[in-house]
Length: 62
Image (cartoon, rainbow, N blue to C red):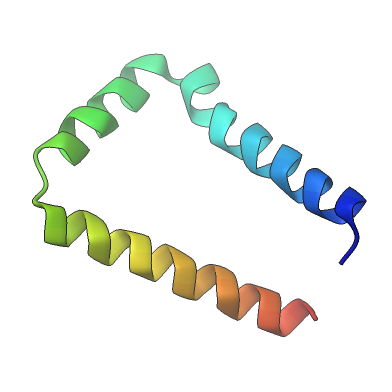
């Protein structure tokens, strides 16, 4: 993977992450309020699931 691919992927992540606050700021705020109520273990589990899905997608596309 060259550096251009890395920067393009990072830019795409930022675009996708910006869609919800742009489309629904109140919904975005409510989502974060709910996340703040989760325990550390629950947040870690969601992080682990996100990593696993990302690695699985990378495995399928490469």
